Amino acid sequence: MQAESWVARADRHSRLRWLGALLFPMAVVVFVAGVAAIAAGLMPFRTIFLCLFAMGLSLGSFGTNDDTALHALAELSRRGGVPANHKAEWDRERAVRGARLATIHTHPKTAWILPPLAVIALLFAASRVGAAWGLLS
Image: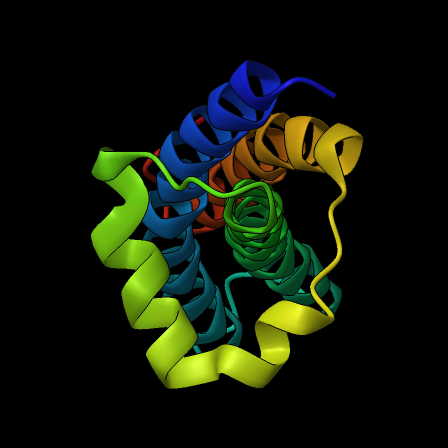
């Protein structure tokens, strides 16, 4: 793969990982509201698994995109040049988790699939919890 493709992959996935970072706190709020709804007897216990699934997908969305972006930066580093806009992040990652970067894996297809799945799961879980609290009909 050409260096430009690795730069594009690093850019794309470093931006896309923040979608997962935004979805995770929302999923935590839905989870807490779901636990409260269960405690209040408004929702069956089994619905909590949907909330956990949404949290897991949102966290996985961040992690997979982060790993894919870091893998692209590792490849660019091996080729001799990390772009200036990623240099500070790359230096920080090498200082903090240098050994991890040697074994990092990339999953670009999964990194594309997980964010929309996380959004769908979160919307579905939020609709169930919202309906339990009477916020949605």
